Length: 279
Ligand code: SAM
Image (cartoon, rainbow, N blue to C red; front, side, top):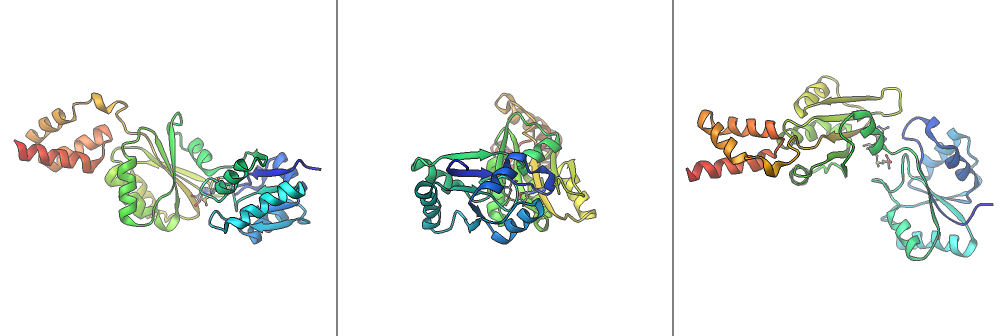
């Protein structure tokens, strides 16, 4: 008999062998499973040899509030054990669940976590990019303006950046990244834990060349290493720009500075134009 509560349970992101013994035992024993898509979860249970003599309930954060409240009522009034799973990986990480967990906390409903696969963490581990500080920014926006604005904003953040991305959008995203993350090492971790797992490291331009030659397929995570200059406040960017602009055209001077210090191209360009107009 399981203790009543919500069991936030990670499932594999490709290789079925990655399910934990505790997750498997929990999924066997719970009476209810809250999932994104009952067909996907039933198939996973069948592949893992987990019995399906339980109630599967679809849950999304956009679902009506009542759906979340219904699960909470089951736990409170019927002493139910409810597992929360997503189609793959860790629930709540670019997947539904945080509203349900938040509601449970508000109403003093026990929540347990069963950790396991998470594409963000596996991608960082594969890439070799700095992991002491990182920022996960979810999926790269599809719209050009939103993508550009987000990249601009994040280019100033002094950590490794991690994004979820899809194959059809990768090349467009890399082209946008080349504008902003100049000179910064990037990596694409693809099909992790599956047969064609790979991680390709390089500049945005190098990655574009690679994925133009080898069209991207499957699931992927995009990462960007931190800005090259650890302490940008201490760099005399204006001084370096001024010196370079005396020797070469403005655009080339901007490119040199962007490459050397991993700064945002738009910011450096604006500063160069301002300096030119003032001189
Ligand atoms: N919650 C999940 C987790 O913990 O990893 C992620 C769910 S999110 C809806 C799906 C995205 O995760 C994919 O589009 C891809 O960016 C990434 N992803 C999931 N599995 C992956 C894999 N095996 N290899 C590379 N990326 C993966």
